[in-house]
Length: 318
Image 1 (tube, rainbow, N blue to C red):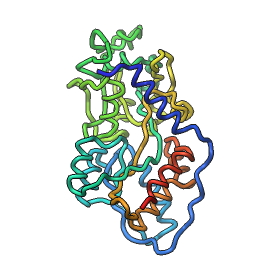
Image 2 (tube, rainbow, N blue to C red):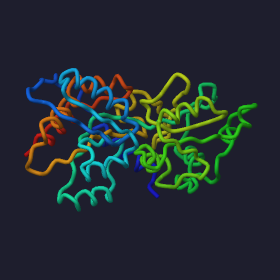
Image 3 (cartoon, one colour):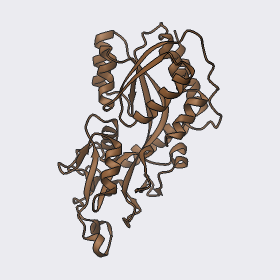
């Protein structure tokens, strides 16, 4: 079990230091000779963002073809390892076992490039009177283990102080399936590394979670903040000091919101070698001003110029 205060403080420090610069990304410079096919296998959370990047990149290079499969972050490492894709979108860091499998096959580690910032939000339908939750309350709703300190399971809305007819409603719980990076990170940050209840309805995509919450009686679900629609509302979450922080672009970019994370594109780059031109230029485009505008367009938060410089340095190192 990890203390909530420590988890919140670590994530705040990491994100605050990474987002401190306010400068913009640089304009992408088109290069000759860029052609071929990009196969992307990985995060469902990043499916729409990958599509936007692909469409805009093809406007620069019409001869480039894309094949995008969004089946969850856990599908990216084996696809990259086995060479069935050359880009692996992931909404979490790679697990030790995934890194070990890759290095066992190739003798070195894959390259994970930070490309955007997302947050996991807790969604309820718009008429739900609840507006905020603590991590302990979230854990009591979703977890069988309750490692965050709740004494009992929360099954009805009146246990959270809701009165009247709504309070008597049973809480219907929705979440992602186990191949999703959202699933794994939510376990870490909101369940204190605990286990989900068997009654959590696991769905294959964030859009499915949002739709289920919007049209189910007394439902709650977690999904990427960028998937928010007008049919649901995102709840404020208490940080390690007890302050309730709403899920907004501002609080996510400042590092205040407790359930924030980087999004990654993973590639197979041998040490002391350059990436193939097509892969390198696509990643350069993603880290450019145009690519980061697409991040904002899709509801995520763009990374700072300092982080972009770090990623470009890693990308181009020989």
